[in-house]
Length: 457
Image 1 (cartoon, helix red, strand yellow):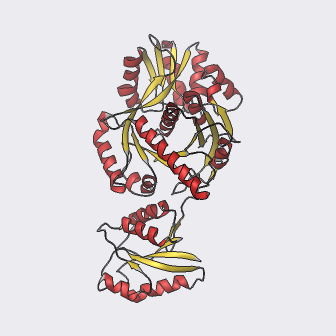
Image 2 (cartoon, rainbow, N blue to C red):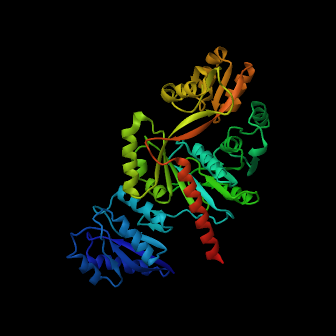
Image 3 (cartoon, one colour):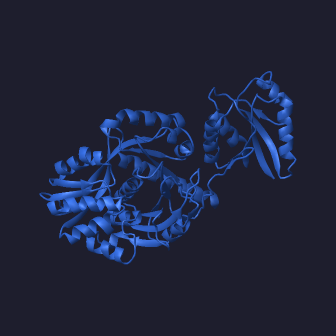
């Protein structure tokens, strides 16, 4: 028998609401155990009249917010329903408010449904045998892989052995272990992998070779509104990671998907210039609510006002959110001093010209003679490289998209050296250092894992 918490409003007469509750109970497999009044006054006397007129406990909202999210969450935690059924309607709720409710309900692990819709919480598989952290984002190109790499490096600095599991759109057919601590980050190795038919610039290659850690490559296709991938091998990837000698597993989401694996903590990556609707509408609030650390990337000086608005939107969803602001900067993993370089990236041309190229020249003593922002567009990348490589003696590239099969191969054909970069996260605006924030998340994950382990005994 499913326990139901009903959302009701004062825009329906009490006898009508009572009839709807009886209709739910008549199904035989559901029982309404409580209701919460979420707004509206037109067809009731007082809220107390609703309490008197219904044969179940009725929670009255204490918050003036519409919808009263905190009260809904408290009612869920008090009554522990299996499903929240929404019997409210316009003008108390609209599409935007319903999705805000949906985010809060599924974040509590409860199904939310109405007359012609249903949103289910992601069924997280409890398969990880180590403390673990989930890294998710509010879109593609927000810097998840850079933050995942930074998290792995921070874990190593704590004397722990991390492993990353990444299910990507370009992941391998079979879940695959890559022992990055035993492999060289060289053009020869990577081109050899490409020649074997492998996607050598996939995220699990990037993190393995840059952080020098074991990673597990998996794949996924599609993503739901809450975030569950339609098809994914990430659970199999985590099971494979359990066989490795590691102390903590990092499960990195792809795009806006939320890995369907039970993890102990979550980090959320959001761009400073993210559309606010993706933060406070749709299922952005869900991702914020389930996260223990929120990293705002691309926090350049030029977008500080946008960053302030983005953080305000985050705190309207989760007032006590831990937020760190960073910019991403290229760290060459080889000597580039005195070299004439071509730099390739997925960053916009304006970001390369205004920030990344000057950063490379100032901090590493090279001279950028050309750049391309088209690692994710092979035809345009080839045009740029054909133009700039003859002027250079080195290619310096991000480790993404076409960085190996196109950029590296063309540089080698021109007789140029190739150096890859780690996109390091540099904390800005006086916020706590990202590494310190990650360490706290790691410690929290370890604590929660031990608590879960003990609760099973």
